[in-house]
Length: 594
Image (cartoon, rainbow, N blue to C red; front, top):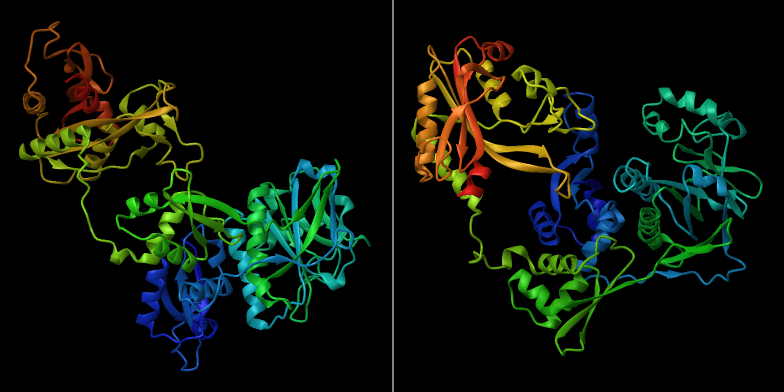
């Protein structure tokens, strides 16, 4: 969850009211956010530098507030304060509108076809008559950073460029050129660089080097020019120094280049709606026409309101509280969603919800229901236990088996579902049969595959605890995963049971007894080999067990597990010096046959 750091005094001034810490925590809870920490800017610096200096009395108090990951409008003080003012009834929901600019006078961005090779989309807008001070400027920059890390996915999907429009001359062009053909002075530098030189220069920059991989291997780099061939930016790396924003900037040109047009629109809307309150004409945004090489043109930003009809019964049934339509519309308006009552064709009460461009998180009626629940107050919703919810049969049988094995003196363990490829196959004397789900980008050699057996985890536990008093009797009931082309996700989970006895002797007879007890609890009789009315055991030849000291468990003609004395080579692989016996059964397969 993103955390937004705001100055307490400036936030309270924006809210038009001061709060004690407890009162503000309560406000955050009622709005669906959380006051995560209270600190100071100097304390943050001291913590980063591991200093132990005493705090000064005049240090500004910083509130760190945790907000939902999809509420991009809350990622800065301006958006947060506005949302809380509307929630408290101190401000009407803003109406965002376009400046009265004819299409002939509208700024234009022409997109060259070569951009399709690397970042095909661009959206733009202008904020006129902006008044910056240091706090507003810092918040403006901080919002860009928050968006870059969040919805922009570290600039891979969207990169934001902001410019002082008065230093530029439209119309603009968005092009993709070979790196050697791009030359400009980047932000915070005093000389010009070719784009390929910049790639080398920024490899030592701690902040920018993590973005170089996005374009450095491309034959062309994206670049934006004004009509005088002044470079605005080299997205997604750096803006040009010529059009840098300052505290004296009055007219801001915002461009977002992207590989995902939908996210680019959301990012642009977030930037312009949040900071349009500082424009000379409040909440007014000047549009920009983006013209593609095929002749198609689009006007950005898209400030259209998304209309949604939600049945009143849908909202009240899911929340579990009987609410009148007027109450629901009032609660939605507190959450910045314009709402009004209408009558549907079947005469049922329906709420018309008008979703503003700031609320890109509202996509479905369930999002509307959630906002009603938040505004109503989760603490005010009566607790109830749904009568229709029953445990799944698989979980019931798993709990039954857990209890039975524990009563036989075994201790339950819980291991990772991921393991190394070597542990899952080679260390068990098995060959890779292609049944395992492979992790595409493992962060560690310990987590390369999803386990196809519980055996590696059980043996690893014993190997780590080999000095534990003997005998060691442990078990696990957990899931494995196997590739399955019949499933829509290409794999399936299976619930397994595994138990192990480790001591001075193998304990084979104890494991055999445990198998019989489990089958007895399942009301499954022991029958002769070939009889499909119960279960029987027969000789098996599994590589992880000692030859001649192992058996398969067959239930109603289906193989559901194996048990036996663990092979000495396998024990040696896991650094276990004492003999062990082990059983593993497919509980899910057993349940399906009952």
